[in-house]
Amino acid sequence: MSKAKNGFILSEVMRHFKKYTSNKIIETIMEEPKSNRKRLLYNFKKAFEHLKRNQSYKVRQDGYHAEIIETNWFIKQKVDYIHNNPNPVKDKVVTLPEDYYFSSARNYAGLENDLDIVMLDLLRQFG
Image (cartoon, helix red, strand yellow):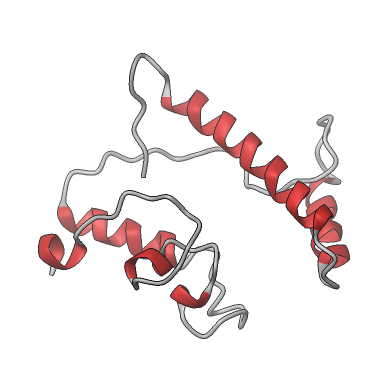
């Protein structure tokens, strides 16, 4: 969930965010000596093959679909979606969403996480 401030346009903020984080993801994968690095880079390169852009890897889907948040139920639904997307539980990477190190679900579960997020009091607000 995001909001543009100080005259910024949300679509431009999102474009820059996706570009920056995609580059950081690739850099991090390249620096890791783990065995799945080759597979990850292959998948990101394969996702790019049909595009005619000057890039080597495709990490994120094109576009962004802004929706106005008007109800508490809608916020809770979106937070649940964020915690389960990508779905490392369904993909059998982890057992619970909070077990996935790069998920903000860790923050809500009170676990260590390098993500700096603004947490919503979901139980109090949306119980």
